[in-house]
Image 1 (cartoon, rainbow, N blue to C red):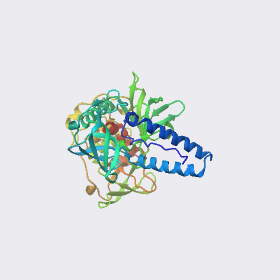
Image 2: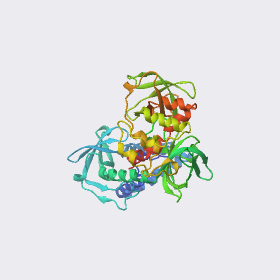
Image 3: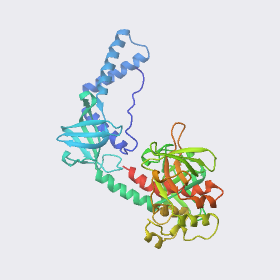
Image 4: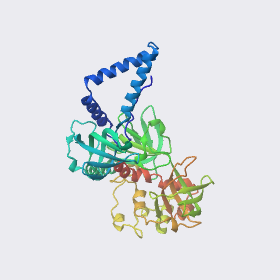
Length: 437
């Protein structure tokens, strides 16, 4: 009876929490009557007396009945958040973020407003007619449940148009590419708010400055999707992690004041395939660094590429310290030949204008391969999620045709590190933009 009642927030990806809270406050305020307020004040006073043991049993029983009635009323209030799946007359069918199907009933008194992605309040919200809603739009509704909880009689609906989300995603994607930088973490200063990205054979170290206004996200151990990244803290980041940041760079590109960073712990595996399982979508191999067997899960999001022999040989020369300037700009079979002719200057952190490191630009032009084409004895380099005690690591990118590279580098982990910036150095901008709402 004395416990507090908390309102649970909407899903993380729904970035309109503040707007939602204000909408709810306005709705509740408009629906309260003087009698309801007096009743709640009386109920609150009774609760205090009960907690102090200062009322008689008859009063306690009466108060308990009142609480039960209030609890039952509260349970009828719903706030589904999700994507419009279908529209029919005044009924909106919504797939909620939790995966449930809910019918939202629009009444004559329902208030519908439209807000832009990223908008934090309803100050600039504009009324929107029901007829403008389309499949794919995002909505947050509030109202009373009916039909056993499968329907909601909406008192208010906040709408975010899919077209607005798409436009914002395009802008975010371009911004990540223009102002983003990625690499492996070398040092983390939690107290100073400084992260240093490692230097490579072709790049200088870059110092990332993190302030209290910087958005910090952390990938989950078993997912590479930006949608699954959770709010994080600086002390979660360790040396060897992959990190992608965007913000304002210094004139010499050696520092960045970060507006947003996303990081994760990923595995770099180099080895020879022992077996493949097309039914289970897995690849088993022995990690040449740890000498231990490992099984990697292949998903629809995994990128499988085959490195042409000539390119692999030139990368091997680079690993040996021999000149191979054409290695990363070479046109290959199945690749875009124009990409080799236009080689813009490098910037610190491995980025060219456009945001992706050299090796990752080359990787995107490599011919794709499939799990069925991988054979026992093939040498591969893989970047995977960390995995857990109960989940297999998931392949982010798998590169075959790497025999010359592994032969050239006694340290197989060093060879595998060629791929390490792939996810956050080349792909995070797209992923982040795709999840921005």
